Length: 242
Image 1 (cartoon, one colour):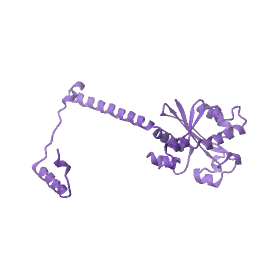
Image 2 (cartoon, rainbow, N blue to C red; image 1 turned 135 degrees about the horizontal axis):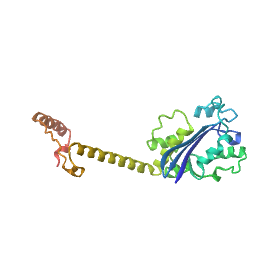
Image 3 (tube, rainbow, N blue to C red; image 1 turned 180 degrees about the vertical axis):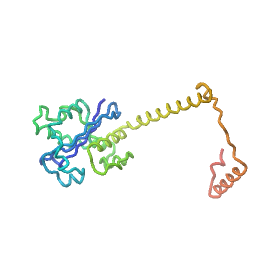
Image 4 (cartoon, rainbow, N blue to C red; image 1 turned 120 degrees about the vertical axis):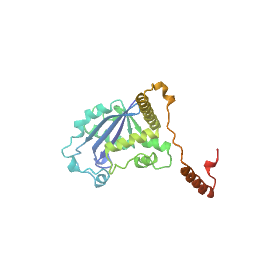
């Protein structure tokens, strides 16, 4: 299963008011694994950017003067997302802008739904967490995903955060952790094999490790008992029970 987590930044809130896309960020997941492949472009909108939008994403028109227009990168973009499922937070917003850009350039297939499927994680979050705040920021906090490096909104960083939220929200994070634990187990086995070999033992003899046991001195035992007495004065001491 191939999924593309996508986010856009724009000059304003509505394509009906002539606003345009100025940044597209996409990252690829295959079978719920991040592959490292990404698509990221800044775009020249040929128009001013609303002050409110600049406050959100921090991108000025001057920064975009030398960037390509949407029609110049559309083939590369559509090739990247072709036949995948787009994972988008508040998909109506981003899809509306993508459809608008395709229509402006009179593309033969002017709807993003003609190229791929769309999954709206905002709708999904509202079903899983009804009556709660389900913004990307709120979901990051809920699922303990570190968003501290995100000073302003950006299409690529928001896509990365959304990918982790989506995996956590739909149960995929557990499989990633299992893989990590498996890797740790493999590394532990390798370390034990190295220790066996260094001590002249065959790995199959691993159960016969000779562990060094250091017993407490009389003074250490007395100090320990003294500490237990202080604990007993304040209530039950769990070390008194077998």
